Amino acid sequence: MAKPVIAIVGRPNVGKSTIFNRIVGDRISIVEDVSGVTRDRIYAPAEWLGKEFSVIDTGGIDIGDEPFLEQIKQQAEIAIEEADVIIFITSVRERLTDADEQVAQMLYRSNKPVLLAVNKVDNPEMRTDIFDFYALGLGEPYPVSGSHGLGLGDLLDKAISYFPSEQEADEDESIIKFSFIGRPNVGKSSLINALLGEERVIVSNVAGTTRDAIDTSFTAASGSEFVMIDTAGIRKKGKVYENTEKYSVLRALRAIERSDVVVMVLNAEEGIREQDKKVAGYAHEAGKGVIILVNKWDAIEKDTNTLKKFEEDIRHEFAYLSYAPILFVSALTKQRLNQLPALIEKVSRNQKLRIQSSTLNEVILDAVAMNPTPTDKGRRLKIYYTTQVAIKPPTFVVFVNDPELMHFSYARYLENRIRDTFDFEGTPIRVVTRKRK
Image 1 (tube, rainbow, N blue to C red):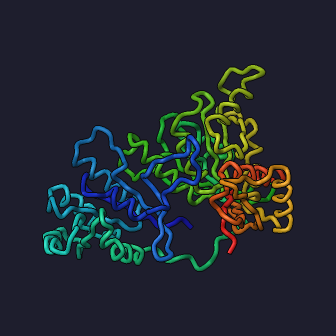
Image 2 (image 1 turned 30 degrees about the vertical axis):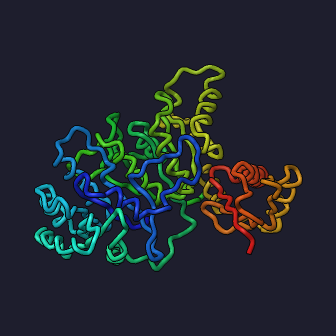
Image 3 (image 1 turned 45 degrees about the vertical axis):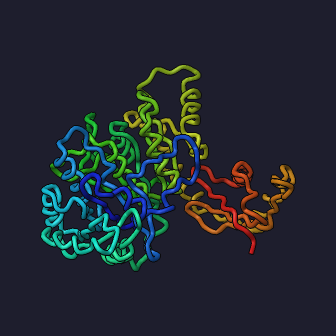
């Protein structure tokens, strides 16, 4: 089940990004400092009182050359479509504006829970200035200060009270959920149709043709059950967001969140683009299984080195996805496409792989014997014990004498030794260092 979503809406300079950063806190930190892993802050995970959710900063959505007020309205429309709860930010210093009132009317008609936050209330004396905002018709205004973190607790308490109730029944773990992720016009819809063997989705050469979210269930020849999540250019009917690159990224993020395995689709004719690396970085950070699929392989001229050269380029540009298998296919001719379901199944299986602690510790001891632990100012890192604590992705905790002595290069060395011993193809793994109590 996808996490609930809170969207932050409001005029520029009312403090949306400050409040966004306050809410997500340290959770926005990047897992790995590797070139190509996205730093985009439009969408981030957060937690409050044990409830996990995602936050959208609509101020990060660039609507292009639209007029000022139209930009705000379109950003609000995106929030209305995507969010479970909307936080509407205004500023006590600028008081009410025409833009506030117009966006408030849209939000009022959205049938979504809307919380009105009046920002920049930096001291108690300013609280009396918030009463004008009752005129927006959105209920009681919440006085907050993004710069000082005041009032955000009460705001989040109310926000999480609107979250959908968790499903009582667990989802069937035997069904593998996967999604095709990629830029418009890389052939995602064609791949879906070729994989299913029937025309379930509209196929067009016009980027952004697909308009609706489509989850398709099917059973492979092996008997494995799959749910395929289509992410192509989804938007609200009658509203055009194709000029918003970050909006298409946002929709891909929602699909990644719901997927067990993400199939990153590249266009062989166009090569690798910056947005490809951005979206793939999200899948990596989310700990999802990843497969890199090069589509339209039939459309390019090839010699004996073409495939090898393309694969080398992928490994260079997607250095952080060294674990991801690469498959060269053609949706048009169905070349190698029959290999994809088995590969998705394998990656999903590796995501859930558990290693016995005794076996794992033997591997770590051998690794230390081959390459002794590092020292710093005369103190040597001591590794006492290693255990797996989670799956999806597989996560390992290494208990040591002092976590500060674990250099990132040695942690990477241990990760590589684990990969050399066990089959974790297609899945990231996490190695976490903890001080032994």
